[in-house]
Length: 146
Image (cartoon, rainbow, N blue to C red; front, top):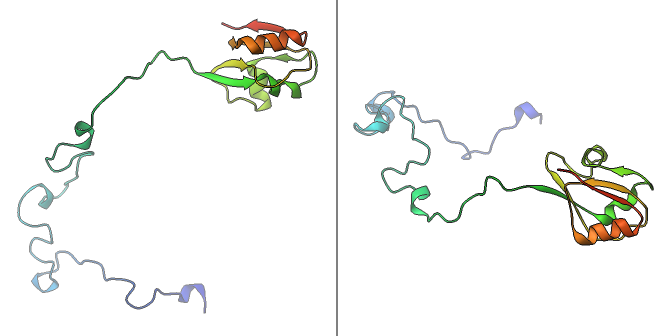
């Protein structure tokens, strides 16, 4: 048996509907489209979300809340992750993106989970209080970016 000899088992496939082949085909005259109306015309297409005149689901369900378009999005890094870098390294959002620790495009926030044992110079948009304490305790430097 070869790949080009494979066929589905008998009864697994149907013949295609041969529309418009006369009354003997069972699909003649109106070609299974019924009489009159939008769907019987050529070029008919259902509009997205149209439910045949029934109130569409997007209008049926209640709307609540809003989206704040001024919300600030932060990339979050914990202090413990900074341990993998060498002592006296300058940590910036660009440096972390280059190393693959953040995706970039957002502001950077440093959180205080984990321990820091090396003095590092960290530049970020925001720091939690515990993160600030831990970096300064390890004799590091902090710079807040605008």
